[in-house]
Image 1 (cartoon, rainbow, N blue to C red):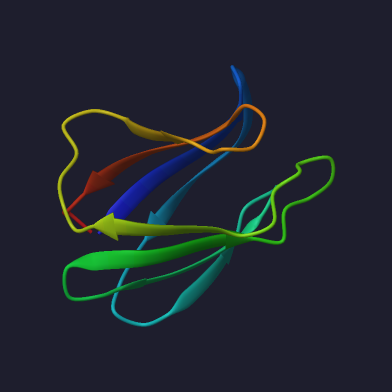
Image 2 (cartoon, rainbow, N blue to C red):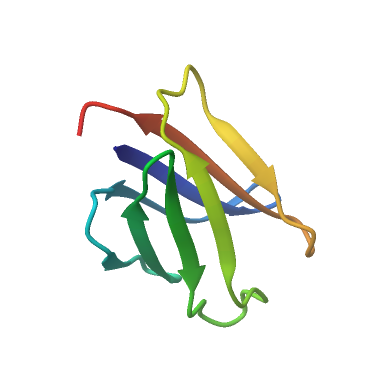
Length: 92
């Protein structure tokens, strides 16, 4: 599964990248954090960690269902104004 992933602080873009999620656990580094991911049976396990300062996040765990997005999806984190947005594609 291919995932375009974006991290915002309110309306400010902090980081953006593309993940190619497969069955083996993989670690990728974005400019503001590290991301560990692997494809499970029904969902992808995605963990964002090691955020750079001044981002005040520690670990963010996402259980992302295997699916094709029809538009950007987003999750507002319960800490300040951080938002994770993503677009999933099954063409990977």
